[in-house]
Length: 183
Picture 1 (cartoon, one colour):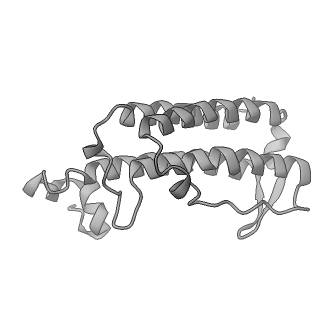
Picture 2 (cartoon, rainbow, N blue to C red; picture 1 turned 120 degrees about the horizontal axis):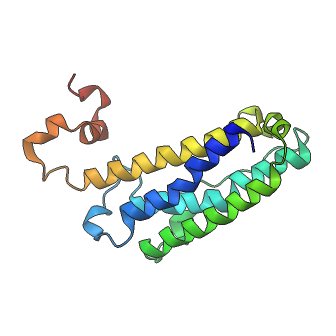
Picture 3 (cartoon, one colour; picture 1 turned 90 degrees about the vertical axis):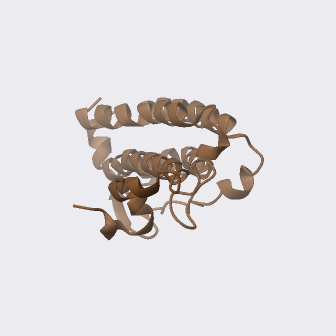
């Protein structure tokens, strides 16, 4: 396994553990607030991560390796979780994400057998040609982006409770105006 792939998989493998540590068994008071106005609550983030495990990363990697640029990726529904997960408890979503991630990493290991595979190209319907390396890097950063979204939503649950200390809490200030963060 290449160093790039090993490092990327290392981050991908950690995400379910981080998500579980943050959300499993936590009271709803910490998870009922979106990260920003009209944003996502932690359960929405986990639902979206589940959708990506099923319909995005591995199907696109397979498309790159099987079809190259001759067939574009299928569209990904970023909001599939909204209706699908309405009545699903957060703990069950967290567990489902962990289960799926384990499966997708096993599939990735079976798919990418050669360093040269990372430079193979596929066709994104909006971005044009992309490499498998770029897809995998995006997957890892996508995880980090959504973990930060979970942190922001949880912090937002205590937005009013922190009182005047909000002026020193960048995570809360970014929820409204990123330029408001004190220097």
